[in-house]
Image (cartoon, rainbow over all chains, first blue to last red; front, side):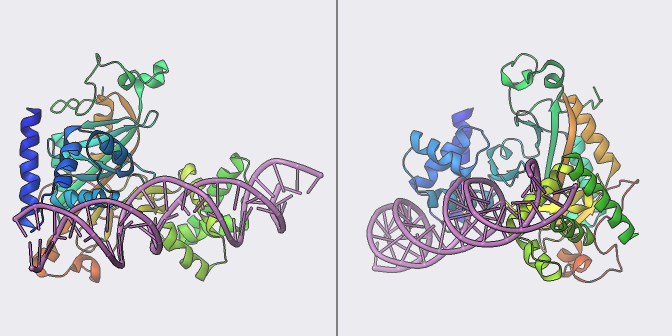
Length: 177
Length: 177
DNA sequence: CTAGATGCAAACGTTTTGCACCCCG
DNA sequence: CGGGGTGCAAAACGTTTGCATCTAG
């Protein structure tokens, strides 16, 4: 399912570039592959050395230019964690409505979805006289585990308690613990 | 109510600085006054020339340092509108739970509150095993008026239809038009 | 008197840009 | 063959920092 969807992603990118009369060069293809293969948020400056290590050598300028295009295509989204840091999130292709919860202690990011939030955001937006185009919900929280036990178990290692990373409980039953 | 609450704000700032063993110098006082007198979001680099025009000449370094302290005190909050832009919002003192809706067309920002969003955010956060500390909800939308009539009436001039700026409908009845 | 604050200018990290050369279609 | 793409290095941008000087308490 991974390489398969990667193929689909490459196709989507190619289609987007074509639709704008742009070329899908090997640099762009390599970059798209790299970005969407590992599903991690990234800062361009962090991505560059990693990308160069694994794949070819693409110039900084080209990388920035391609990222902009991918954002424009809707395949990549810019998110913000505060501190003026510019992060890019490739996971909106898989889960177009997810939100981010950030552990104030370890800065780990948990992606989650909630249909109720979505519906509510829609309602509010329309009530204010707008048609919603995009939403970004970011919650900062302190990990209960961490506060009680002193370590951020949830994320540092233990995968047993709950999902390891990305996308947690995704539907129904909203009840405050 | 404006100068009165400004006095209260100055007091709060002074108390914060004092509590940390810091001084409330005339530069800091002038800056706090300037920031909380006009309730606008600002980027430091935009604020500096305006501030210098109206009030005294405070160095860039001092301005940045003071802004950091105000954020630390909780009186000022950093918000993000995308594009890696770092904005500061002084309005969390008046309405601690507000969110932002941004018109994708004119980039105008509408502040709004909604208790339901708040409650839901709390529930979700706890469900994920966290205690919420801060939330940031940003919605981008296209103005219906603009789309239908060609101009962004709601914001460009007309104050008749709905509130001019900041904080709109704030409670009850959520219904999707 | 002294810890802390200020102002300046230089340094910083990230992103953008101008330009010559290159290559895909 | 031509319009876009690339890579390089330089510039731009917003922010932070080191340091000498000043000032509030």
